[in-house]
Length: 268
Image 1: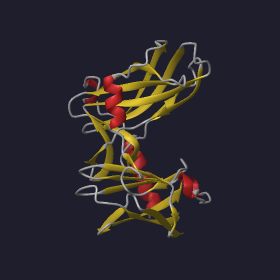
Image 2: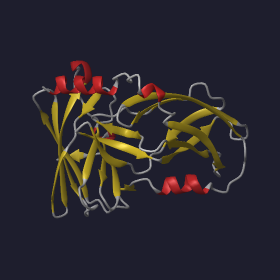
Image 3: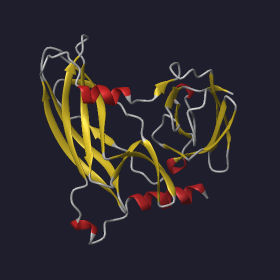
Image 4: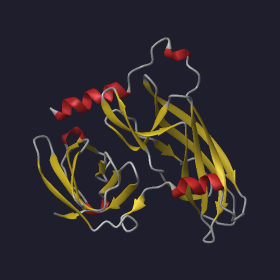
């Protein structure tokens, strides 16, 4: 049963550290890079994560064995909204399951909308991240930074991280993105049919349904010429009703040469 498998995976993520693991050095260091101000008054900053050798942290959609990052900015001052961007992640195997994330170092660009563009922004971030070596554990971080430099010159490290985001559908010449959604044994079955050039060997397709209360399985991926097909299962946590907004579905294709992000999925 998929529900039982999901429960087992959640227990894996929350397994406590052994006594020996308690003596490991801190696996993760974090800081906020102040960045620059844009002509419209918004700011670009960065969250820099530095990992100890061998350690990994997780992407927005971390895979079956991962812990998704969570951000709480509610303690910030002069903040109207903030968006976290993600550079293209890597795919790795953990406990026999696929996980998606980063190793060594990653900068997550932050697009910040202040309430008053002429006043400083005081960022206060409470962050929960999963980190993994031979064991996996949650890390909780509290960071703060004052952003008041009106400089408009981009910070090279943040600009490089922005450039590492997946291509958009238009940039990658995606010709079609359609989804067939049908009842399954424990929820729904989804089949995404994408028409786009190859992104390289071993293409991985991640489907995010746009609802945090839905669990999405790994997808089985096949390609025939320009058509890439990905099939997976959707389950409502707690057994609730299932309804999808097709415009909120996000599909990411991770290949050895490039990655592509597609927003929205038309009926098949």
